[in-house]
Length: 358
Ligand SMILES: [Mn+2]
Image 1 (cartoon, rainbow, N blue to C red):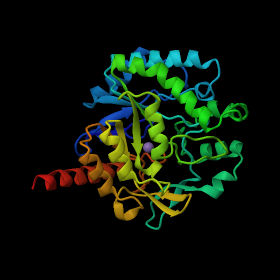
Image 2: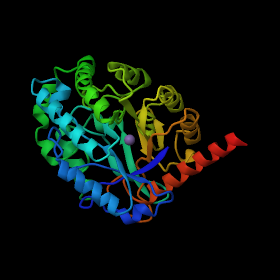
Image 3: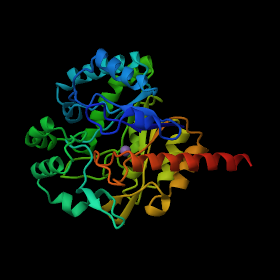
Image 4: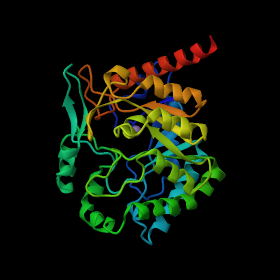
């Protein structure tokens, strides 16, 4: 596995590359051009500049999270062809600078959703939390305001103010899109772009929906093993792969994460692993916890063992962390708890590796 760490760029991240370089094992960087709206082409010179910034700090950039998909592609409007054309151009530009994996999601309107961005835990740390009842009764217009107010002054990925303006229009459009239609539209998109990916050697890695069930009545199709199977079968190519996010899929206790890792890992379809733990309080209600098995509901040893058993050699990163030791950073993306996550994941990996050789 190749360890990485997500970084939001010089202007929009409180954590410097110099600090990331000191994390044990010196992880690679996962980043993006976060200011470019979904649907637009990423200019080669901007990608070049990002790559040079990362390399100047002695680090590598081979994974992009994310190149977002324009809603017209998800809805299936005639204008999708223009945006798909732009997406292909972005992929070609990324390939010129050695990018190997592109993470993306196919969630309508909203990116990930939480009901509390800074829930205080008994130990005095704070974390992101989700209560389904709270979320489902919020008017989508209001949750946009609340996310903005609670974001510590940073703009959250997928929640950029420009996008929120068109919320009502989007909701209207999605009334015609059910799960089957959304999957069909994902198939259309993948059939267009995967040949380009094969040509330029970039692997696509779809991120599960977060949480893995419908919110605000919008359809969601990246939620379970069965649905992931449908997605990889839309285009049968190793370039049509997955970002396997443990905390995200794991929020539904019906999803057996080690089993899912083994199943898709042995098919060579997991290109990017997001590893984090969550504590499920009751169905639909969970807190994000430290990565440690005993702090959450997921067995991190079993998850890492599944990756090891299938010979996983893709990219991996600790996912969200809590805010600890008084750190003030983008919710979920502080330095300390994620760095602890890396040390823990690496510790599990080394132990599994050496135990097998005894
Ligand atoms: Mn994730």
